[in-house]
Length: 204
Image 1: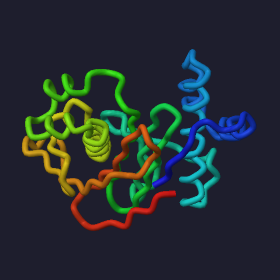
Image 2: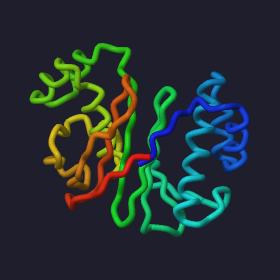
Image 3: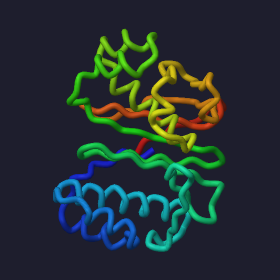
Image 4: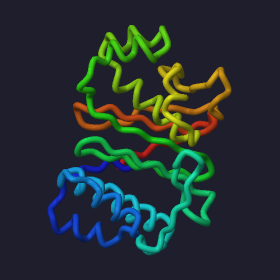
């Protein structure tokens, strides 16, 4: 796991921008807000730099494939899975070997979390939301969805407070081992790995 601050000096932004492929550049340049454009550039540039170091490949040479719902994978390397999430000035990158990974980082919500949970979350989680755990639960649900390569709406009914998560409906291929990830105050973050085998979680 790599926890990354996205607000870096301009020189570093330019170095990371030089690593991006044309599609990533188009996406970054599509943001009208300069801060969002810069943060998108840094998140994706760091992803290339980290994956390139793991695989001993120049970062600019990495190519992606995408699943039915957009989950990215490294072309030609089905043995290595990665997941990237960013929110505000924070990004989280997860890398795993031999199993699918999903990560999510979320800033505290600006909307009525209780009303949202009452509408979309399963009943047992509503008391946890009332106790201030909305962001923790939300990041866990989205991490599971990303590990499965599904859609967010499929993850809302999941009960995610435990160590392992199953989808009783069978809509998402599971189960998943789920862990909270330490991030700065004001954020919640989680990682989900396919299967229930133990893992060693290292956060850089």
